[in-house]
Image (cartoon, rainbow, N blue to C red; front, side, top):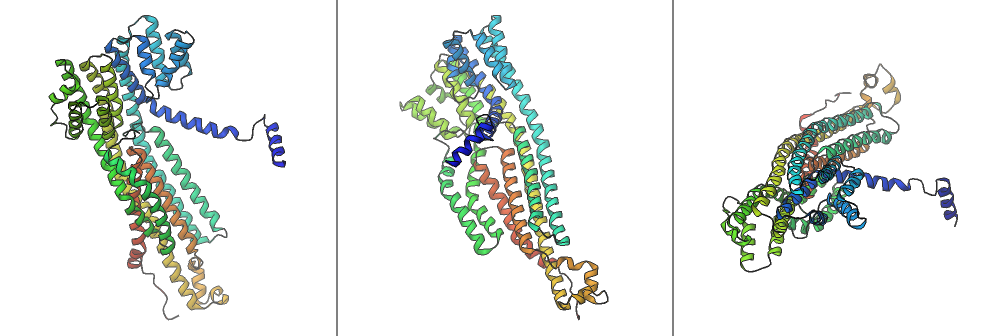
Length: 532
């Protein structure tokens, strides 16, 4: 009861709300807006491609808006649904509905498109003419926006490497300062290094995420490619077991390098399978642009059905799509349901672009559109995205090639310097122990111990090896996690790319962690005083 009374007093003092009650909703809205803005470019291209395709079937304006509003897979279509609501429920005109929704739209690209559509309708321009020209405009705007994002990504990926490396240098300086000055509160000093590195890493990752263009490679359908099916089946069992086993291994061996190496090896199959699927999807998407144009041209030129057209297409030039095309052709010839056959084709391809563009082609053809024109429209829009993806892949590969050695360097500097300091601390402590523990021996400048203290070597005697060792482990983990996320952001792809980069960087980190003390012991021999 006391707590309830306290809650009422807090609410009454804050206009009926608890403190920070709206903070969670505000953060959620910001994240939703950011995600929607990233999806807006490609989804607007999908939507306008769909609208331009169905106009070849002589669809009326109400049909164009009704069919488009039904496409729930595009984030932009919810705005068309709202236009439909104003027109059909409140008897607004399409010009008024488009103007109202355009004013409420937060994305500049979408707002501009809705305004142009409304002005076109008001001017009496046929929908088919407007959408044909608008599709060319959207392609140009999308290409320009994508290329700007790639330029920003290129600059910020380089900046991320530089910033994270600088943050690691700050952590190294703090580690050296602890060895030299031996502060009373070591944990507080180390916490400042954690804060600096985490802050810089988050800033770099968020900036890269905001600048990178949206390009979903995989769909979210239940039926998926065989590689995706393997990953989905294994990850539910392997990930929890791998994490628990690596933690147990760390406590048993007290060696973080072994745990990282073990976890990297466990994640390697998932990462390799995921990388192969990502590569296959890129190849399938590149071939699908040719396939859909050829299919539309054969259907339109000869006036034949899909099943007959599939037999006419030269499938030898489509090595990656050929098994899927053959599967659809055989199922349709056996009299199986055409929709289910194509749904299986889409699912097993694993590609988001194939999922979106094939549905556009099939819907427009079923409505009575011209297959050759539809194939040209769909193929051209998809080719635009495929070519831009190739540009992104070249930038991503350059970043990954730089990221891996830089990660090894960051981890190596921390570990090698730590083990060198540990060796120096043990050597100096051994010398000081030989001189005796009396304070006069260390304080008298006429003795050897006094000369050691005067020369500053005694600063390594009280080196907090355990605290700094844990600090190094935590810093290495922070850097590894940040670089895994950075690699996924730049490379794109499904979540299995996290497994790929985690496996790769954990293996590199584990090898360096295990090898560092051995190499330091081999090449760094601290001289000791003899005959004291």
